[in-house]
Structure formats: structure tokens, C-alpha cells
Length: 190
Image 1: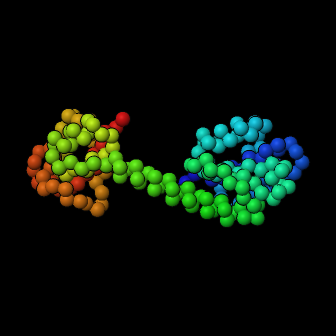
Image 2 (image 1 turned 90 degrees about the vertical axis):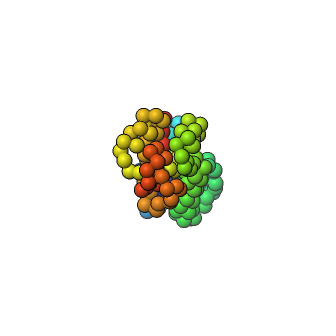
Image 3 (image 1 turned 45 degrees about the horizontal axis):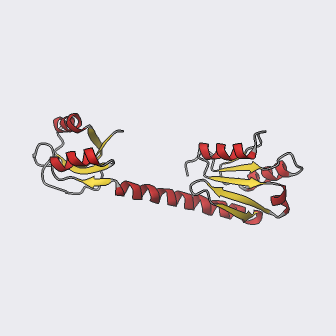
């Protein structure tokens, strides 16, 4: 959703008659999206690699044979899946693919975050987890800056966020043992 360019149209064999015109026509047809046409003199392979490096979610390849068959090749950056798409269905297909990319990337990130988030109810667990497992640690905190500073000094971990939806993992702070007021996500910068 936030990609500056959502779709890059790469004309293949662009010097052939009608290819650049068709690419421009497709750009107009896809006016509801942020679209660019790569009409530079670089090779198609270079253009494909450039799309990958810049993080453009959808690449459309169109050449003389594709125009003749009224189709194009659509490539998803996240899965590298290539699909033949009729030019008549292109707008609907691009919309669907962009929604699927957003959903799939969010779910992959959420799954990764959840798999790398641990819980500690005492300082020994906290220190062991910080040293052995990369990711976040949920732990209770009393709210005292001195405790946060001590945790940072001893483990290198700092508070990352205090979620709006609080969980009560324990009654006491993992550092000082005083009554805890907040559940905090902690993590070490790498």
C-alpha cells in the first residue's frame, strides 16, 4: 500500500513498433495505481533486477508476442510468481494481486514476530532469553527509570513498547521485585 511505485511496466523489445505505445496505454488503463513505464535503453534483465532492488511489488512484462496474444506477464515480487494475464482483465488482476501481497506480507511478518516473542516472569529467565534468543521479551516493569537503566546496563536490552492492551504476566517487576505497573516488550538492538 505504501510503495511509491506499485506497478512497473517493462516493455520487452521496445524498439519494435507498437510496444512503447502499448506500454503507455497500459499505464493509462492502470491509472488507479502508482505506475511507471521503464522505457530506458537498459536490457530487460537489468530492468527486472532494478524492479526487484527497488521493491516494486508488481512487474508487468509486455512484448510484441504478448500484444499479438492480448496478454502480458505479471510478476509478484514477494513470491516471484509469474502469471499470464489477459489485457482485458489486467486492472482487476493487479488490484487483486496487490491486496494479496499486502495480506501475505503482513501475515508473514506477524507470524515471524509471534515466533520470536518470549515471556519472562523473573530476571533469570529474562537474562537467559536475551542472551540465547533473538527477538522480543514480554516482561513486567515497575515504571522506574533506574530499573530500565539497570536492565540496559546488564543485558543490553531496552524497552521497545508498552502495548495498549496490557497483559498481567506477574505481580512484580523483573528487575527490582517491586509491584509492576506495566507489561513491556523488551529487545536488544543488533
